[in-house]
Figure 1: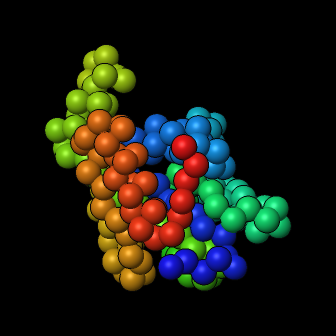
Figure 2: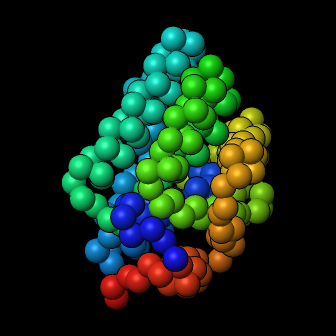
Length: 196
């Protein structure tokens, strides 16, 4: 069972198109606070040809993540759904700004001790990624983008292993309702009951 003195964070991890936002919105409809991936909006403001701008992005994501975490503690939130959380953001920083990723890993250990994080890795096949991503991009996803997200997936899984973090792999190739059902069953088994 979970330590009820600490807030529980349902962490949705996975690559682009794995369904993190869709699943998060479903849980939000059940009354849970849901927090989108912080980098989603920030990334639109960055000139990726500038190493300084990219480093700023990874530092700013970390800063805003920590501020949000503090607001959860101060606000008395006992359960929230967070898309990507620190693990996913470190996976991106490992590709973009390794020095920030290294600093971020030290902070992660402290954050893990403050919360009851339950990590769900929404796993999709290469075929599902290409199919879903191509629906969003009329000309199709370029191979370098596909490789980038494959590397993100590898970084997430490596980080979970390196930090000795337990997680639940979820087959996110399935329909959304089935993915929500699978996550909900695990939450129930861990003592997290959701309203319907």
